Image (cartoon, rainbow, N blue to C red; front, side, top):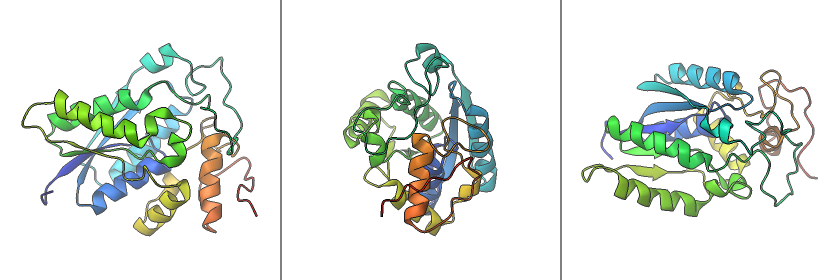
Length: 232
């Protein structure tokens, strides 16, 4: 990596992707933000957080893409109004209803296009191990395979590294790193259901609250409920 390398970071507005931004910057990359609105329930709040963060870190560029194809395809409680977002079940081994079929492949394809067009040398995504226990497109094998797609699907002179820095991390480890890096978690949003306050009971809220609770820290965003998710 050279001193002026840049990276596209998939920025959802949530805590994992915000931490990925700060991790990329800590590694010396100038961040190009890619934020997608694809029909998710809390898309306005997520975009607001992503835009705020782009300004906060003086991102090289902020690309917002609106696409409705994932919502039109459906089969996810994040995008389908006919499907309710389930309450958190942190011990379940089932793929949750919030899984958006092959979403990361869709988003990463756009990110690679963006990276190649801007001569960026990496694409960062904040996916992690607690995700891939339920989401098949968050597994290490998926990102390894996607690296091969990048290698064979871009120009011969293009070199883009697929970086999922937290793929073996727990949510707690991400939060711990983010607090060390100074990530402004008060300007991130994770809730699947509500735009203000966060519900506190969906999967995303539960994993987030559990991470802060495990560290003995108070999550700085507002919640309708703050259940205790740390087992004694």
